[in-house]
Image (cartoon, rainbow, N blue to C red; front, side, top):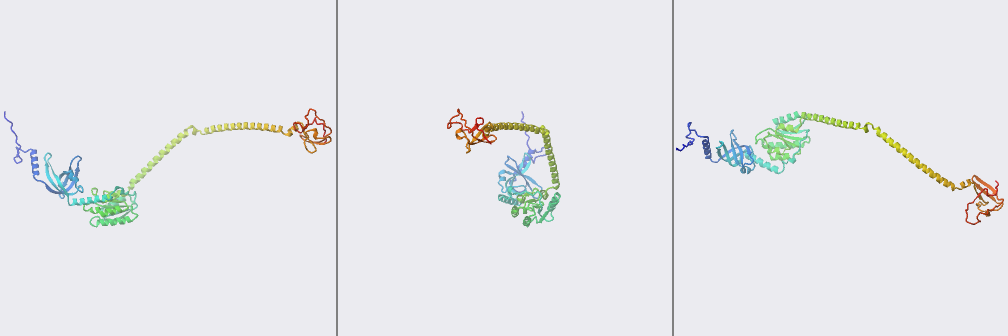
Length: 443
């Protein structure tokens, strides 16, 4: 049995139309040729940074600073994290990297072994160190941020004269709220004198008590053009003012240090105009909505309370309230009759008691005794005669009867044999019955 014929892979030089080289041969050849290049120093700008969770490799894109050419760049996470200041997008760097070709996917990349920031990258590094220093002092603390007034009476604006930023802020703000007033302080917004002039304008507006908010506005530009707005003196001046400050420097990607110390950051000058004054049309719609909502809620409350009133009035106690009064009147009438009867009974019993006491008092009265036929006999000396021994014949007597007195003279003495002797213990009533008194008186 004959052995199978082995197919040899031709080299790239031996590849022909009839015997072409496979893709793997080309990929491996390119990979071997790239590996022979060795490490190289490369200058460029970091355009994109991607840190994927769970991977020890950081993926970036290195872009040429003058031509529209870029290539992938990778490095170890430990190298990336050890950079101080941290590497950010847009930084210019010089890297020591080894070119590599990934044969499986046919991609070319640079594997960085050392990264150093130079040029603009060094400038950004200094700005980052300045940011860290000022942040450590607390100049960017969120609790120091002040809110903007809802409707400022006067707005201070710091910008370049006749600039697009000035027109954007003024036109958009007046379009939103026509009555807004501005006090514009012009200053150079680029160059070496920019920071000093902006500080002077800021202090002038701060000294005006009518200014409620200050806007620092400038259009877009390169990192070098925006350097005055990261000046440490300007940052500290903004930190010291008491009037709220709005930073409207550049466009959305631009982030000077002024954005961090300002009370409010606006992405563009147009956005600053939207932040400092409300939209009159929107506020009018809000007032109209609130008024309609308030009217609706008030109507609902009134309707609900009216329904409750109707329910209360529909109850028998409120539908015919006089029934309660009639019932209470009957109770009062009954109580009054009971009180009258009770008081009458008490008065009757009291009258009976008074009658009994009066009868007893009258029974004990000497006048009542005289009215029953008794009389009181008094001698000439006025003493009551109680015994025949107290009087003598011919003596004058005064006899007291119920309706007057009689004057009499003793003509005879008729002793009573059954009467107790004089001086014995007897009733000392000094009265004498008329029939037993034989004396006949004369007027």
